[in-house]
Length: 122
Image (cartoon, rainbow, N blue to C red; front, side):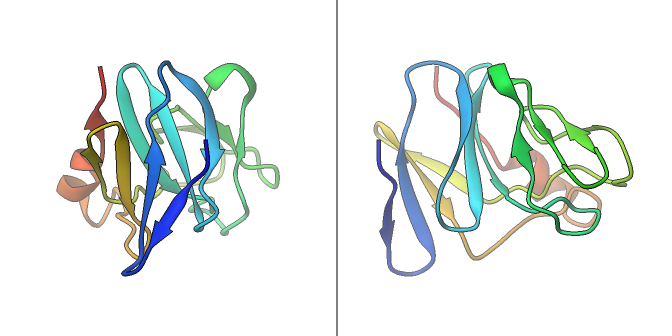
């Protein structure tokens, strides 16, 4: 499925039918379905902005530079980072999710927005 981008810093992405490996959105982020929820993230590790890699089998993300690891929902597991991955605002529109690509929530600065930046898809 292809990402479609509209004006105003938003992107639409089809909802996968099952949990799947995170996909690069092409707009500086990733979209991930895990345990019936959809998340959108910044591609950069919060430690030193290195591009994160998706781990095989929908096991989350890892920074190739300093080995920080994150769960599929962006929660920090271990490594040199000091916080969770930055989440992008996401909403559901029928069988697609809409991601706001110009805003990112940091878990330690915008905790309420970070925790609410996901949508149920089951």
